[in-house]
Image 1: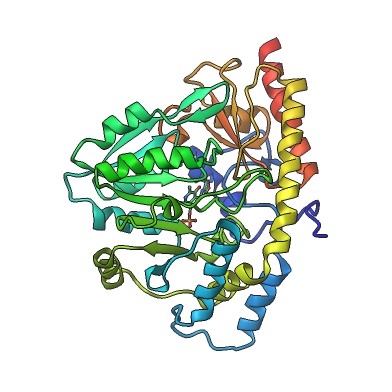
Image 2: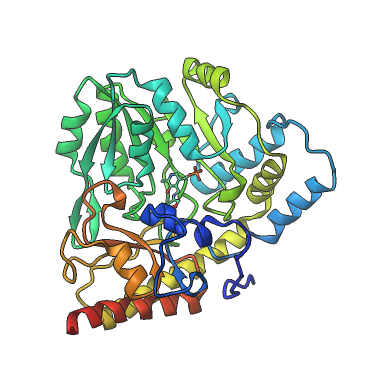
Amino acid sequence: MYNFNEIIDRRHTNAMNTDGFRDYIFHADETMTFPYKDEEFIRMWVADMEFATPDVVIDGMRERLDKRIFGYTRVFEKSYYDALADWCMRRYGWTFDRKELVMSNGIIPALYELVEYICQPDEKVLFMTPSYAYFKYAADFNKREYVCSDLKNDEGRYSIDFEDFAKKAADGKTTLFILCNPHNPSGRVWTEEELRKMADIIEKNQMWVISDEIHCDLLRRNQEHIPMGKVMPDYGRLITCMAPSKTFNLAGMMISNVMIRDGDLRNTWLGRHYNFDNPLSVAAAQAAYEKGEPWLEELRAYLDDNFRLVGEYLAEHLPRAKYRVSEATYLAWVDLNDYFAPDEDLPMFFAYKAGVLLEGGNMFVQNSDGFIRLNLACPKATLAEGLRRICEAVNTKHTL
Ligand code: LCS
């Protein structure tokens, strides 16, 4: 039994979570002050966890440390591929050829590169909104236009507007679709039927697809993840991204897997990418895939429980909040439109009035006004205090 209730002090670790929020959420520097000291905040924002990385992963890094030399490193050994391919086969009934696998320091750096390699300057990138904002930033960075297809929201359950998606995909200049499965921030796990419908549209228009499956290991226990690679087994223009970073709280180790089917695109990548990996990260990722599964199963049970607790607390204390348990991720997506005007700055409100750091509103490109996103990957005591503060701040606002 792992102890997910332990509260771990993250100060003085150069953590984005503790020290980077002024810049990331508020575009401000250290002169920005709050009624709370930094260490008094309940932090429910950036997508990393308050839980320790599993011991088996730390041991993997330790074994690598003991080898004492940390020279230039790349994933050469087949054992890394075997660990990841076995993981995918065991959990998703899917596999990929070894030659397709390239490594990246992150999915985001990979997106920044792939958009450039795939899209000509006058071509456009399509994704679904609300969206993790870095999909847009990947287009902006490369000076490519982007096109959004708004998801439909029916009482908190999101679905794809296939008519709109098909129309936008049919534009000959829209050559790349970035799929987020499971979807951040809605928490949806796209079903086989939804994936097949998307696949038909993609195939008809011969679009490139980057399937960002970074959250796929973090499913609620009643859910099943289907890789797009399984739905489109013979489609060459598919890139699949997976990583141990979310699953095992290794984001700072900066290692992720990119499976590129198309040989020409892969050659472009290999020719232009800075192809080195951090030796400790390789050891950590391999140990995670080989030995991390029991820890992950306990983590999932803990997260399921946190999602249940949020539902119960909101139903009692903020009954007009719309909330559904996310099908995957550790991120809850809560509709507070009954309490706030659409243009209110929710991260600012909750930082000042509640001492809670969270993301929300226009941080998700579009189609997200009045929503907050809560990171539930924290000990129950932290979660309880965060919820208490959030609900109290909203209820106080409404009695003023
Ligand atoms: N793709 C998605 C869908 C994500 O949610 C994230 C992290 C990444 C990629 C980042 O990948 P990396 O470059 O670290 O491999 N999501 C975050 C979020 O929503 N807030 O903080 C990070």
